Image (cartoon, rainbow, N blue to C red):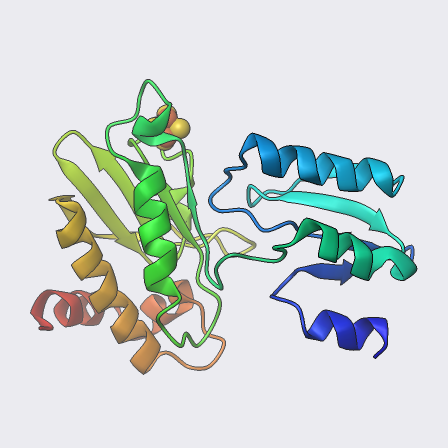
Length: 222
Ligand code: SF4
C-alpha cells in the first residue's frame, strides 16, 4: 500500500500532503479540548520525531506539521486517534464553561449539534457556530447553522455564510430552550437536505427558495 492509499484508510483530514512533500497530521480533538495526557503524548511524538512543530487551525484543531512520508504511519499509530471527530463540526466558544459573559452552555450545545449534523446526508458541507452570548465569538450568524445564547434562551439562525459571498443567517427562533432550538434546527436541516441541489450551501439555498418557504417548512413541519 502506498502513502496515498494508506491515507484513504484514515478518518477525514487525518493526514494531508503539503507543498513541500511532507504531511500534516491532525490529532483527533473534541471541541477544542485536550487533557494533559493527550497534550503530552502529542508533544512527545513531535519531539521524538524531530518534527518542525504544532499549530492551531482556524477550526480549533491542533495540527502537526512537516511529517515525512516514511514516518507518517508510525506518527499516526503513536497518536492513536487522528482526523476529524465529526463530519460537520460545530464550532463552540467557551460560554458558561469559562467565559464571564457566557449566558448559555455553548460547548455542550456545540457537541450536541455536531452529533445532530452527522446524522444527515447533506448535499454540501455545513458549518455551525454556537456562541454562549450575543457577542457571537463562534461567528454564529455567518454559519450555515448558528446558535447564540441569551438569558432567556437560545437564538437559532440558518443560512449564514462567510467566504467571498458573505450572508448573515436568518433568525428562525429566539428565547428557545435547548430542546426547542434543536427541534427547529432539525426541521431546517431536513428541509435543506431534502430540497437543496447537490453542492448548494445553505446560504444559496435560502436565497433560491426564499425565506418564507424555509420559515413555513420549519414552523409547520411535525
Ligand atoms: S460569545 Fe460570549 S460567551 Fe462566547 S466567548 Fe464570546 S463573549 Fe464569551
